[in-house]
Image (cartoon, rainbow, N blue to C red; front, side, top):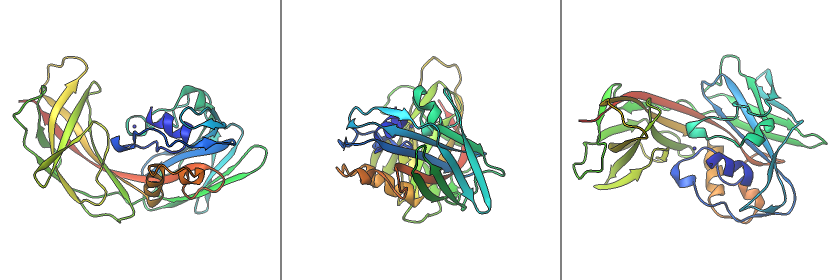
Length: 299
């Protein structure tokens, strides 16, 4: 979700991404070194990770970034305090994979992680405190959303598709969920269990079809869409006609929603690339997902 690399280096494009977030960076000029933070607490996850980087002075279109090492990073949940430890080169803790993207190898030492006893709690609030080497403090709070409720389709619903472009359009399947607060951002995606294949989706609105690529698509403000899988593409030939997949709906908190809006407004103000984290650019936010198993069928 290359997207994360841009977000961390430029600190204006989010690392959690639908296709609408893969835009050219806002042309800010960094006149002094900036600290950037990226952390997304995901409901149900057994760990929490924070990526800290320094963006060096220069044009944002081609910024230079370095891992921020030597920081003391804590996340406070109620009476419990988690002390996050640096993960070093090749760290996977800050690599969410798929939806979350991957970070550049040289930024690994800026990744801090700790196990979360009992897992990250939906509806729970967390506080981030970062004491920087040489002085200075970063502070932020995040409340993880409640898990969204997917009402349709039912588990095991079949999506018919094609493996070559065709005018024979597959039937649509209704996807509906319980409404969430207007301050939250919603994204919908379909994951295949087959690692070498992706799908192209369309949804219908007022008789018009809109394309969805194989990454999350924003459905904020909606409570349903009619989805069809118009094309299944595999990197290597496959001899199966049924594929297992999962339809995933993710709710992001208001901080992330505001961050996306600010990151996309092409402002020339440096502070437009930060939401609620005094002392740094970036975002400290929460997310929660619901999913349902589905079957993709080639006739």
